[in-house]
Each structure stands twice: as structure tokens, then as C-alpha cells.
Length: 81
Image 1: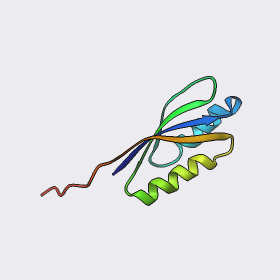
Image 2: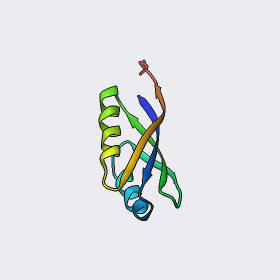
Image 3: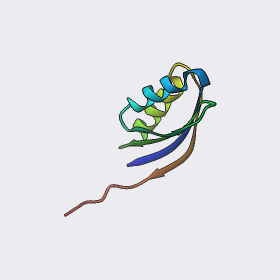
Image 4: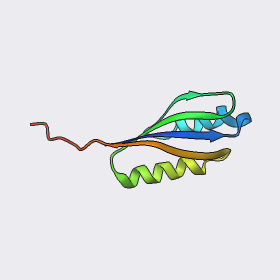
């Protein structure tokens, strides 16, 4: 499991719409937003490529000015027997 913290900066007048778009993406959770369009987001994916793909999707959403990964953690899967 890959867990990433991302700061998304959206156009302030479209921050609510960006928050809705982010929340609709599987594995993405919006934790906080402010009036200037900054949103704190976590991203959980099963593998590295999925993390890269989803991060790219966040960056390319309409009205997103920037997406910056500020944290990444890899938790190896354990066998439960």
C-alpha cells in the first residue's frame, strides 16, 4: 500500500468544484480546504504506478494550478495466515 500526502492548489473561485472532483476519484480523500484554494489530500494506492497515475490525474484536473506531493509512505503487504 502506497500512502501519499498531496497539497493541491486550485483557483479559489473553483475550489469547491475541485474538491468535489477530487473526492470522486477512488483512493483520494480531501481532508481540508481553505478560502485561497489550498486543499490537503491523501492518496492511497496499491502500487507505485497507480500512485503516479493518480497523482498525474490530480495535477491535470481543470482549475488546479499545482499539485505537490509532500509525503509518501510504502507499507509492504503482510501475509495473514
